[in-house]
Length: 204
Image (cartoon, rainbow, N blue to C red; front, side, top):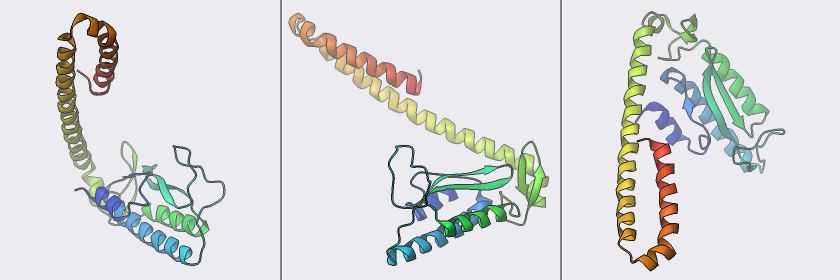
């Protein structure tokens, strides 16, 4: 299990609508932010206060909710960006502080870092900056391996579904002509459309 998943599992209610799309070095900053936010929300609830800031946008499904959660977490121009729903002034202050700290924290290892100019603007320590090309290549290889594995799983699911589809078609074709005329055409149309959608999703 990667460290991003561990953080999500630790605070599932905060990461219901977002993923920490940053490298390992900034995860301790996010962990501290989550811990303090969780304590603040719990303390406010004990006082009967619901934390939902004014002017916040609802999540993508369009439903307003009466609790705080992250909506997006990413790196931008060398710094951490934390977007959320339902934050009050206290949480916004915490977020601003953590975002500011990210400009002094190496995104890769968590040591003291500075803004560096690579092909992108990154916040890196001296060691990670000098070895950046190797780090970048290793991350690329890891992401490529993960993509190929996920794609292989999708293809396996596709062929299993296609096998089931072909079995159903075979049974329909064995029906007598009257039954096939009454029911077969509709079933064939539905199944053909189903296979077409699956093919577009997974690929041949």
